[in-house]
Amino acid sequence: GIQVEQSPPDLILQEGANSTLRCNFSDSVNNLQWFHQNPWGQLINLFYIPSGTKQNGRLSATTVATERYSLLYISSSQTTDSGVYFCAVAYTGNQFYFGTGTSLTVIP
Amino acid sequence: DTEVTQTPKHLVMGMTNKKSLKCEQHMGHRAMYWYKQKAKKPPELMFVYSYEKLSINESVPSRFSPECPNSSLLNLHLHALQPEDSALYLCASSQRDTGEGYTFGSGTRLTVV
View (spheres, one colour):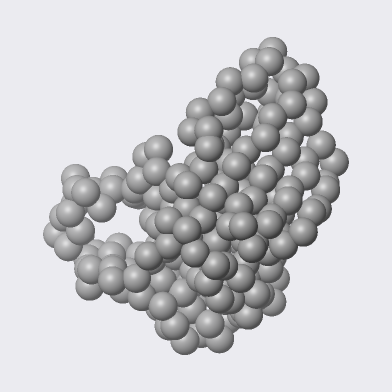
C-alpha cells in the first residue's frame, strides 16, 4: 500500500515561532488533507488540498502532487497549536490513509 | 461542538460482551467511516459506507460488524473482542465522491478487559 511519511516526527517551538511540516507519499494520489488532533483526541480538518496552495489565518498548505509532497506552514505559533498534525491521502475519492504524524509542542 | 456525534464517549467491556458504538451526523454527507486509533499512532481506516452501502472493508476481523441504518446513522457492533482491540474508535463523514468536508466525531475510547 501507499506509504505516507511525515517529518519531523516531533517538534518543540517557542510561542511566536514559525514552522514547516512535511508530508511525503510514495504513490500518485488524487486527494490530500491535513488534520490537527488536539491533546483531547479531537481531529479537526485544516485543509482539503489535492494540489496548489491554500491559506487560512496563520496556517497555509501547499501540495505538489507531481512531486509527491505537501507542506503545512504554521506562523506565529500559539500554545493552542499543540497536538499532532496528520496528512491523509487518497488514491481516489474518499478512502483516506493517514501519515505517521508530527507531534507539535508550543511552549509559552 | 463537533457536527458528528459519537456515543458513548467511554466504554469498558469484557471479552464475552456484545456492545455497539453509535455515530450520527446531520450534514447531509453520504459517506461515513469508521477508524481505529491506537495510542501514539495514526488513525487506521476500518470501513467506508457510501449511500448507506458498505464500499470498503479493510480486512477487519468479523468481531467488528458495521451497520448503516440510514444516511445519518452509523453503528459498529462489537462481539468477542480481545484486549488488543482497546483503542479510540473514530467516526467521520464527508461528501461522497471527493472526501471534501471530512468531519470527525470526538471518538469512543474503548477498553476491553
